[in-house]
Image (cartoon, rainbow, N blue to C red; front, side, top):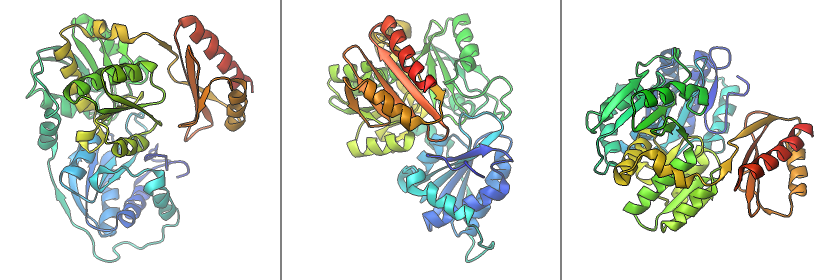
Amino acid sequence: MAGIFKAYDIRGIYPQEINEEIVYKIGYAISQVIGKGTVAVGRDMRTSSPSLFKQVAEGLTDGGLNIVDVGLISTPMINFTTAHYDYDGGVMVTASHNSKEYNGVKMCQRGAYPISYETGIAEIEDKVRNFDVPKHTGKKGKIETKNVLDDYIQHVLKFSKKIKRFKIVIDAGNGMGGLIAPKLFEFLPGEVIPLYFELDGTFPHHDANPLESHNMHDLMKTVIEHEADLGVAFDGDADRVMFVDNEGQIVSADIITTLIAKEFLRQRPGGTILYDLRSSWTVREEVEKNGGKAQMCRVGHAFIKQALREANGVFAGELSGHYYFRDNSFCDSAAIAFVMMLNVLSQAGVPLSKLIHPLKRYHATGELNSKVKDPDQIIQHIEKKFQDGKTFYLDGLSIEFKDWWFNLRKSNTEPLLRLNVEAKTPQMLKEKSEELLSIIQNS
């Protein structure tokens, strides 16, 4: 059980780290944190999800909560269901983009407010570790079932604006995107070339993690073969999405954030757009150029959702492929991001590769992870060495110079340092990233 309680969810290897006995206790503990009322409970297509779902539901009802069983759904659908039907909370059995041996639990409160470590997971962990409550104490909650897919699809379609006909390759990775995409295209124009739509928690083709480029090869190849306009890859629980342009090239999530931000600012001039601090300078520049207010925020869905609420922002994008929307209870949705990209292409009237070309004006490393013994000491050393830059501490250490910047953050769960560097030229990027990595890896 050690280490399964993360910053934003509960997750581990099944059945060694997370199993039916543990999720029963987690369900009971959630019931004590939420207190009373009704919660929606859903699951993804992993092979261990049905039995874990049954036990988390048992724990929730033994704790006195009523349950609405919404069956096989995506994680964004549990947030939508909780907010749309005004339930007291939502619980999703999933391990998101992790490989097949993992499973876990994601949670939200009334209004789809995320439950993070600070706002409930720490308390749940404490109750699970000290669990000594007998079963069936007090009044047991009731279970009813509900199909929410049609309502969710109609909610997503509210974001569509005169979408034109495109040829699109969609790789669902045998995850929950395979449930949502076909239903969307009952209402949207276009030709879909499906890859791996069958729900299969063994992930027979590749892991449903589009952040790893090797999992995108089939999509990239199929876009080229079919001369498609767009490639789309969902992760396992369909809360993240990555895109491939018409030339079969992966488009980084900060460039996608820029495009969607510009589309929102066209619809709603002057809006506030949030972006995570690993994103390119391009995001801020384009948002301001298009009359919007750009606000940098720290990494992590619980933090971004909160910051988006506080700023009453229209939209937020994260480098990990999460996209958040004010009109989606400030929550993320890969399906809405996909529809917004169809809006972007419909408005642009040019291929995606041409649209993004002027936005790729800087050069970035992407996130580089290094295993280290003493992360704090290394961060202090680097801060001192680069003290002539503009320094801030929104999330780890960020230092900006005229021609380049970097962010260095500790992992929430491992002894890792995560480095992101961006520069105006490839030469400067190579020089500065190598210098930083040398300090990190030789300290």
